[in-house]
Image (cartoon, rainbow, N blue to C red; front, side):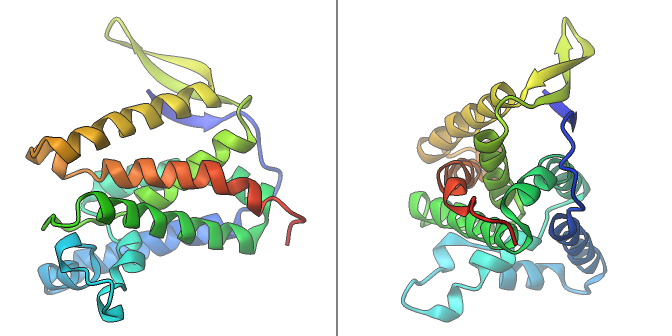
Length: 217
């Protein structure tokens, strides 16, 4: 299933959500133009086996890795999901709290990946964990919204208005299943996607979003 748009407008200008998207795109441009991409990834991506919780200098990647991406498809898919679902969540909890919430979910997602696979030498990067938190908040606040979604039926792409709760729970279950598999099955195809971070981010957003829903800023 691939979402195209949600059918309920937020009614407010998503200044923080748009700023996050533009920031991610700008940093991706820096990735494309840097003379030494390997060094940049080594320094700012989250590589679990390089983390030492007693050394604060090694903890920066928990935040910096949220703004790096592995390619055009990676960043475009992430920003597309953020564009569709982020504006409603920002309008619901307020601009400043949304920024804090986004970063909190992203760091929590990265921490989950680190806890379950601490010896991995694969660099983890991308906004997926933070965006998963936004999806969790959307599922909490707007379960009855409809999402226009492309669904393959007998090989044909059909546009169907799917309840947000169904689509997001389906997304979460696929991430959780692959996350468990990534712990026990060491394969390249699974190891290159941070499913555990996605799962952790979604759960952190789903659970903590209610605590961010006080009078908007």
